Length: 449
Image (spheres, one colour):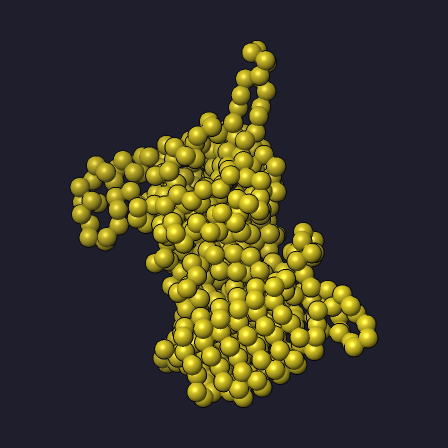
């Protein structure tokens, strides 16, 4: 998923040159074959639209863009069917004072191929630079700071990368950067086989418009190579990998730069990472959108009229949700629209999706409760958190495989898919339940198909 800011120069008054800034945003969201590690949550909702802290993942990207007042248009680019994106685009159009469109790729074109395919839409208005954001990242995006850094390099920088520190062990799972003088990237390797650097690529960039010439050179070389057209890998000849085919060759040429930042940043690869991102976005709301957080405190019979229920911050509750005053929510809880929470319910470190029902005195910890799911009375739904190691500076989210080397399910958060029913007095521990299942007993460390 990519975000692009565009600048347009205009002549004013016939002789004096003035600068009119016009910004665009392009968000590349991939397609339905992506996000397989996010299942079963992505079976009924496209991963870019999965709600984190009460908002679809890519709405957080949109909000970061519209903070820049010169931004006039956002282009969402991917190969999801247009019908799956129409409602979101319409909602965003009504919510923000910016034009938003969805452009559907005819096939998967890679992280750079999609931008090159729609280069005319990106370049319209004669811009001079654009931002690029991958849509599977969540962050406190320092877009203005990154653009100012890129602009400070004047004509030297074709691409400026937002970078952050990772542990030595985790860095090899990301794109690694080696910096030289003046933050120039002298070497770049995507997911190296051995240690290269602890400075990693955040998937957030600013690019000068001349980068399309680099993309074009890669595109035309593939068109001329007959073997690439018949390589049997099922990829279109216009498929271009941004990291391997653009950034790696650009390193060491004096055209690639990186800005190390300390802002919170994480990828969303698995459902467990959604819980982690939920916590941090809720924390960011305290400064940017305090109105989205429920008032904290203990609910009593005679006082605290502003409290919906017992709240341990931070908690987001949709206005259409019904929460009993004796329930206790938080910390790190998001309650979706139409949710019903019964008396005495305890929920923490959890995302509860639209129209779910949690009945009296049930306990839900470290879980995601799917749309339309029901949890009976006195039930327990619990998962295992997979947060970064707090004792290691710069540690990132681990994304372990579903099964360990012994073939057993790795402990993780519990996921109830769409329309799952958990009977009263049952326990679901460290399990994944696929949609439309009516459980008849307790489960531990299982996938219920």
